[in-house]
Length: 165
Image (cartoon, rainbow, N blue to C red):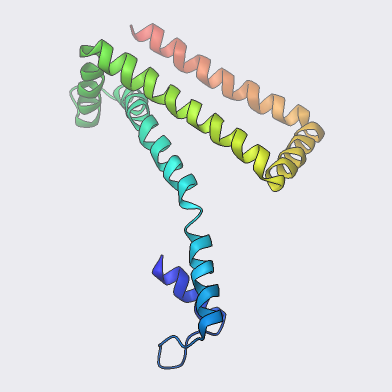
């Protein structure tokens, strides 16, 4: 972050050739204000990082399911994936309910709350959404074909999973 502030200050002409900052009280006030504005955006980053951590156990489980089915269980990646799946199955309340349902649901709820907050505060977000929806409307047939293709892939994965059980 210090590099970002230094770059911004150097762009504004606050740095001398010796590398030391030289500015008067007004310049110092604007530099502090600039740094304060830079520090205002981390709550969104913190929430995004927290949501990533909340869904990571479910992502690990889903990845383990896919890797487990890629090759025979006696080989290493599939064997390690089988151990992860077995660990989740061994602890149904913690593994299945907590890590696979409660944490991703918390991330979803938090994300929806942040989206609603941003929707009310940011005009650019509303404009970008309108533009995206207009583009989808223009290319509706392509979007429907892509959706059908993706749903077929998911149905094939579910069918494969049911056949192996």
